[in-house]
Image (cartoon, rainbow, N blue to C red):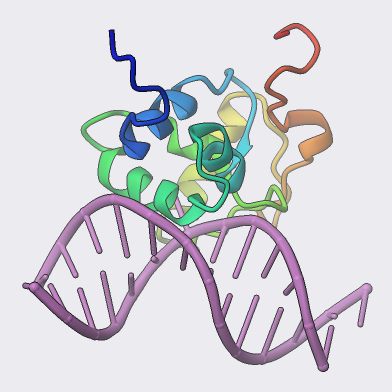
Length: 113
DNA sequence: GGCGTGACGTCAG
DNA sequence: ACTGACGCCACGC
């Protein structure tokens, strides 16, 4: 069938990864990009979230930066993302900092591989 | 058709 | 340890 591994549109692949993020876990933009096949597509992931977060109902709130911190500007989704994460049981600090050691998604980690 | 941008990441100083 | 600058690729105008 496709016979064309890796040629899948980065966007579609990235969406695939984002949808694969377990409930109550968070992943970084770079991580999603890497899993999508582009270790430097972190910014592209951002573009996807902005474009498909609405019509696709992507769990964009489960995606944070490398520090596990919400980089969204306050009043522009920051509070919303924090609320959604807390709703999933994720402990979010006052600065939007999340403990990746506890809530960071580990693909291939215990239970997945 | 070309330029700038962007919810990041990595290297260097 | 921290700050600054660059890179990277897709998308909008």
